[in-house]
Amino acid sequence: MANDKVAIYPGSFDPITNGHVDLVERTLRVFDKVIVAIATNPGKDHSLFTLQERLQMVREVFGGNRGRVQADSFEGLLVDYAERKRATVIIRGLRALSDFEYEFQMAMMNHRLKPNLETFFMMTGESEFYTSSRLVKEVVSLGGDVSGLVPAKVFEKLKYKFSRRGSRAARPRSWGCWERRLR
Ligand code: PNS
Image (tube, rainbow, N blue to C red; front, top):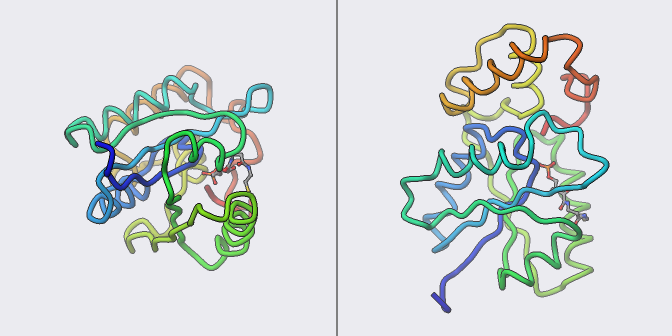
C-alpha cells in the first residue's frame, strides 16, 4: 500500500543465516514490509550460491509472512535501489565491535549520497552473535554441523553444495574466520 513503511535489508545473503532471519523478524515489528535485497556484482561475484538460489532460499524461509517480506536483487548503488523502491530506511545488523567501522563508513557514505535515506542498526540476537555466512560455509565445507545457525533447508542445501563441489578445493580463502569481516 502507498503508506506502508518499507525497510530495505541489503546484503549478500550467501546464504541466509538465522542471524538474518532474526533481524528480519524484529524489523517487521516496526515496519510494514521488509525487502531483503541481494546485492549483485556481475563479473566479481564469488558467491557459493547463485543469485537465483539465494533468492529462493529467502523466499522459502519467509513464505509464511503474507507478503510482508519480499526477496529481490539489485545491481549498482544501494541508495539508487532504495530510491526506486521508495524506501527511506536501510537496516543493517551489528554483531561484534569489529562490524562497526565498516558499517559506519557505509552508512556515512550512503547518507552523503542520499541524505534522506537513514540507516538503522540493530544488534543481532545473542544466539546469533558469532554466526556469519562466511563461517557457516567454512564449517560445512569441513564437515561441521551448523544446525540451529541456519534454517534447516539452508543447511541441507549447503551440505548438498559441498558434497558436489568437494570441500577444500571449493573453499576460497576469503571465507575463513581469519578474515576481519565475517559476513
Ligand atoms: O552482507 P554484506 O556483503 O556485508 O553486504 C554489503 C552490501 C551489499 C550492503 C554493500 O556492499 C552494498 O551496499 N553494495 C551495493 C553497492 C553500493 O551501494 N556500494 C556503496 C556502499 S557505501
